[in-house]
Length: 308
Ligand code: BDR
Ligand code: CA
Image (tube, rainbow, N blue to C red; front, top):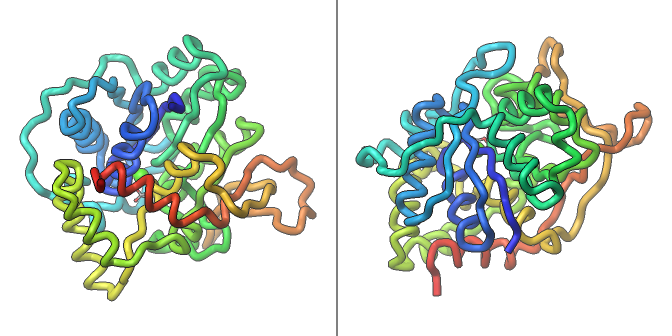
């Protein structure tokens, strides 16, 4: 089982990724960022998940806001005001740790140098802070998988052609993209290409397992959002990044390029700029995941939802 460190802003698709991680890997910690909704909610949601799983995974709260600028928007319109579909779960029993997420990332990677795969499912604020505190962090991480970016420039944020995690804290993404010599990038457009048919989703959540019932509950707001926007198919960005972290061989097509983050653009702040033609001279830092084995991806989800 792959040992994982997960930085996350739960979030409905974060939740699915975290369920997958606990089913298929050893999760050393959840370090929590603000993003989809505020930090109070994302930390609480992480604790709720640990309760649901009957696990003891430590939860570390991180930064309550981006490094530099307050974002224009969160993603409550998809994930619900509390990030978990406004179901109204009881206060979780599992407590958060006192240590800051960035410090926990540094300590845990010092305790297990070269062992941990770091999976980033939210804005990169905690990772950027950790890297600035200790620039040797990348040397101690076995592998970094990031859900973020929009490599063909479509994106999913309101105003600019950017993806949410990068657009929420572009400076943090810039710091991380420059600091890590190589990472796997699972972008928004890859997510869209790896949608599942709605009837398959319905079968998964009818498994009878408590994880499936839980997921179906928190998915309610996103389901209504999709219906209102006439979107069909089940897509889960963070689940795709998690699948790539859990099973590297799932990747069928990838391109390695230099990827940078636009910080100043008049129209494009937060966009991921890919040097597709290798003309800008930057060293390749990202393996951009383009295609994965969809059946294996679905199987990783199905098992995490208790489908026999
Ligand atoms: C990313 O943004 C968040 O809303 C999701 O949890 C995912 O991490 C997709 O752009
Ligand atoms: Ca997320």
